[in-house]
Image (cartoon, rainbow, N blue to C red; front, side, top):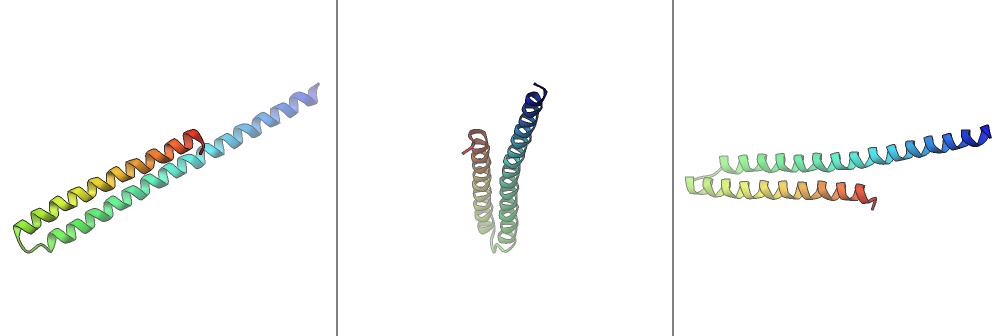
Length: 94
């Protein structure tokens, strides 16, 4: 009888360890996607600053500012979408 409960305890402990490892991997994927999105946004901002600084006229500078704002917002939406996709995949275990 003692041996049966010991085996059950080891199986339970192994299951807990496997679930914890899977949860850690899922969190890593989500953090990785969030970091990648932040890198893309920083890249777009640096590119926008360069383009605005090289503008020849106020009209061109306004145009570059509008375009930069649009691109940065697009990257933010894409980053949120990717993080949401990773969270859903980790939740449903796809």
